[in-house]
Each structure stands twice: as C-alpha cells, then as structure tokens.
Image (tube, rainbow, N blue to C red; front, top):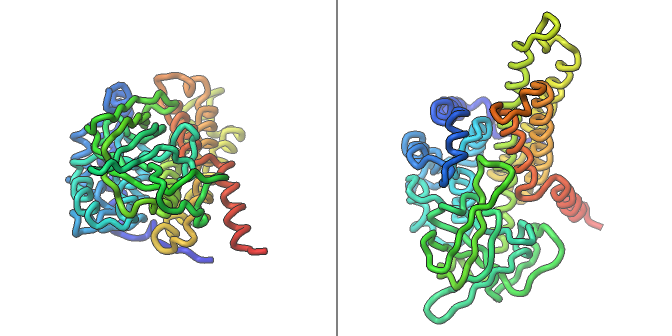
Amino acid sequence: MVWDMDLASSEEREQLRHAVRAFLAEHSPQTEVRRLMETPEGFDREVWSRLAGELGVVGLLVPEEYGGAGAGVGEVGIVLEEMGRALLCAPYLSTAVLATGVLLHLDDEAARTDYLPGIAAGHTVATVALAEESVRWDAAGVAATATHDGSGWRLRGTKMFVLDGLHADLLLVAARTGTGDDGDGGARTGDGDGDGGVSLFAVEGTAPGLRRTAMRTLDPTRRQARLDLDDVPGRLLGAPGGAQPTLAYLVHLAAVALACEQAGGAAHVLDMAVGYAKTRVQFGRPIGQFQAIKHRCAEIALELDAARSAVAYGLWAAQEHEVELAVAASVAKVRCSEAFAFAAAENIQVHGGIGFTWEHPAHLYFRRATSSELMFGDPAHHREQLIRHLTVEAGP
C-alpha cells in the first residue's frame, strides 16, 4: 500500500506551516497560555477572529461558496500540528474540524448555507455534543431524546465532555428520535444499540432550557463542558434517525485530527528535551553527553517518527479513501497517543526536578498528552476497533 499526500514538500503547505507557527509564537507563548487557562472563557476572541480573518485557517475545510478556503484535511493537519506544539487555547478542533466536518458530511444544504459562513468568518464558535455519562463515542451511546411537539423538536438529556461547550454559539447535539436505524456500518464503537434512530440537531447557545456547566479536567488548556437539556428547542439536521453515518465519520475524523495535535505536541517536547540536554551542565559537561540522556531523546525521536507516519496515513484516508478511514483513524490514534504520552513523560525525566514544578511548561504537555489519550477512545479501545475491522475485512 502506498499513500502520498505530499505533506512536507508542497511549497504552499510549508508557507502555511511557517505562517501559523509565526502567528502562534506571537499570540500563544507560554505566558499567554497560562493567562488564558485562568480566564472564564479559556480563549481570546480577538485572536480567534485573527485566526479566521488574517490567516484564514478557521475556514480551511469550508468550501469557497460558503466563504471558506476550500482546502483539504492535509492543510488542516498542518494547522493542528502547529497548534499542538503551542498548546493553543482556542476552539479550533471543535469548530473548524468537528462541527465543520459534521455539517459537510450531512445531507443538509440549508444548514451548510446557514452555519458555515459564520464559522469560516470566525463569528460562530461551534461544537458537537455526542458523549454522555456512558463515555461512549458512538451513536449507540446516545440516550438523549428528541420529540416533536407539533411546532418543533425538543431535546432532553445530558451531554458530557463537550469541547468548548461552555461558550459555543452553536451546538450540534446528537439525540435519539425513535426513527431510523443505528446499524453499525462498520463504525460502532461498542456493543449494543439503544432503541430508535439517532439524529443531529442544531441548538443555539442561548436556547431556553439549556444549562451549561464547566467540567474540571486534567488539562486546563482545553475546555470541556456538561450540557443539561430540559425541553430545549433544536433544529433537525438531515433526515430524522439518519445521523449514524455522520457520527461514525465524525469520530474517525476527530481521532485523526487529535492525532495531528498529539504529533505536534510530541515534536515540541522533543525539542524541549534536546534543548535542555544541550544547556544543562552536570559534572562539568552538558547532560546531553551522557548515554542515558541520549537514549531518552533518541527513543522520543523514534516514537515521533512512527506517529508522523500514522498521521500521514490517517490524513490520506480522510481525504482520499474514506472507506479505509476507520482503520487509519484507529492506527493514528493509537500511535500518536502513545508517542505523545511517552514523549511528555520522558521530557520530564530529562528535566529532572524542575520538570515537576508548576512554573515549568513540561507538566502542561504531560497533562495535554494524558487527556488527549482518553479523548475519542483510548489506545486499548482503538486496538479493539482495529481487530474488529481487520477481522471483517479478512472474512471467514
């Protein structure tokens, strides 16, 4: 098998990488990350507007007819990698990738016309509310319900771990309508189905009956929220009971996107470890000259190489070969989760005692690595998915 998305050699993509890295160096230094961690919103709206307008990266996936750039996931992957390096506090994953990906995948032209221009322009922060207390990232885990009262749809239930859900202007909520078929389509992430089909609904952030609560998580640089829906009005997106294929695609896209972030984070902590090893002197010489430190840095580099290969495979599948996306997404999520977790832990070991302090950024990358490892399924879960998919492909 050969996949080649020309991720490194394209001049335009390298220009994009350089522009994003320079922007983040100015607007997302460690001092700014720490400041935003303590704010109620968790990100800077002005910086978000500049990401959308000045750089145009918020609308990369949005087609030109809706005000976006009409680029592919390869370009988005570059942006995510750079944001992972900088620990950018912004709703990029939730808005520019997840919500945008859902709207593009659904068969609902009116919704794309209504919502995508605002997302691309940076006016609308959007997210997807899928997981619940069962912490299942699939349609079968949806217990929230939606009923039609004659005048419109009303949603009831609880959503958990909603990225940027506390301050999102638009929430794309999965709820069970009792219509349609959840069939696995090769994309279920657990055993068992709920009763009735699952649909997606657009819910305004100011909708009556919606209560949003910030969740305290390990990673303070990425905000998550609990949503309680009590007779909340929602706009049906697509056909009733027909959201399962889109939700399956969403989870795979999310895994690949998160893997890009993880690869970027791993690359940064490798730079941190190597830089410290070159300058920290013990026993009259830099600690990087000691064999044990060399081995740690070399092992991080090997893990990073494997992670980047997995990311390339995942991006290729997302853009060119969706039928292989389920396998590629799980491969990327496993390799990048483990690579980032290993790199972040080894970086702390290279730094020694200072790496454990609150003032040093090493622990922030460790927190991000640990949190990201669990999001959208941990490595053990994705290994199970790989076994399931590959067994199906192999046949009896």
